[in-house]
Length: 177
Image 1 (spheres, rainbow, N blue to C red):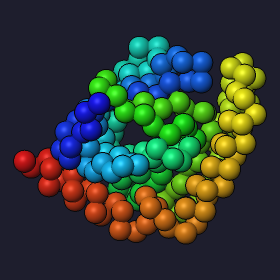
Image 2 (cartoon, one colour; image 1 turned 90 degrees about the horizontal axis):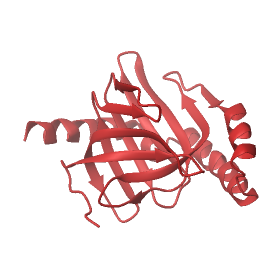
Image 3 (cartoon, rainbow, N blue to C red; image 1 turned 90 degrees about the vertical axis):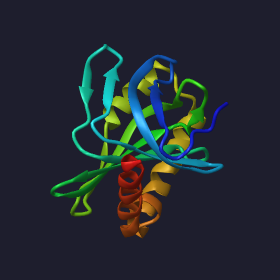
């Protein structure tokens, strides 16, 4: 398995619990890799939905993936301020094709004013029944919602004030090369 280097581009693929492809992002620039995490950036990135519909991201977004936590974080840099879209998802795996994870429907959105919303609870319950999510997954996801809310409240990791400045500047430096 090739570990991507800073400035290289990777594909990101999300799947559903039943193994079906959910969404693909092409050409995410890698900003940092470590033993347990990858930070990247999407900027006008092509996204393909499972039904074949395609669209392009509108604003720069820093993406954070971890091998131990059951969530990933998308930091969207917008004119009206930074907002976050946090996907409750399996830890990522990386192979020669893409960075891959299972999307478990639940999301937390954090608005520029700090308001937090838990989204897609109905979708989670529907898919939990249809795809027979094991009870262990349900417990892990609910625990990771708590961890994520703590990170948000404490300004930890991607929610720190410095995070956007550091990683967006790094993206700009790598883009100029």
